[in-house]
Length: 255
Image (cartoon, rainbow, N blue to C red):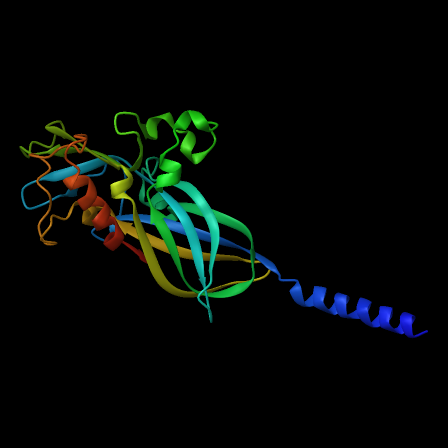
């Protein structure tokens, strides 16, 4: 009889403990918006670069990685995403720019968080692989974004055209700012209070201002893109690293 009572108590304890361990699940959407001086970024639309130069963009895309959520009330970080690819290349009107690009993470524990941390680019471990290691559907399976000459993925791709003689024709020079290599990997921590609710999708809006990626070292003027139209010199990564430093400051949460 005592054994039966003990067994019953044990079963009840396990059941109660199991119920206490159950946590509801919800989804988290990170909505990325691209802007230029605060205005929606639209491909092939003209923008003033500086006082004498106009620019239009054909491509703007980048990798994000190691996305973790910072739990409220503790020092714990919950990893929710290893790698993904954010792309604005097909945004050809303001309506599409307002929607941006959404990265969705499903079935996360319902919990309160105080911020998030994410990598800008491809971390060293993954950057040591190459596109042939993955299927085409994988974010790292893009042949267009593996830089064999550098042994690196292209972390950020910015393609554009400039009109330096002010004739209305954007045929004077191409701007090819492609960043990569382990030295250029950056991280960004963003303080932001939010909660993943059970059975719901929580959305966080992150804006990146593309013009700010071109700020020169003084933080006021912009890089001379006529003298420096591309970043493909493997022996000189000064501009590549500057663009990625700027990326940290150009990305912020929209409250």
